Image (tube, rainbow, N blue to C red; front, side, top):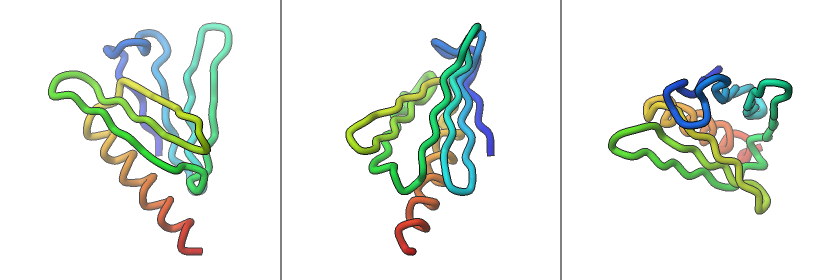
Length: 97
């Protein structure tokens, strides 16, 4: 499943950040003009999730794993809730086995 940050949000005007929720992992792509950044996170490596969703504006998602933090901004509140739900479901599935 693919989610794309709004072009109206800060830092996403030309190349918006994309989140891909795959069967076993999350891929976060931050495209750029000459190069981009792509990060893969296995669901079981994600230790904590934080969501910051102000009354007005775009939401921010923070994923924590092994002392590291990845922060993405510019998604709608609806998208962030869905992203968090899917990640939480997949994290709990992986822990049962």
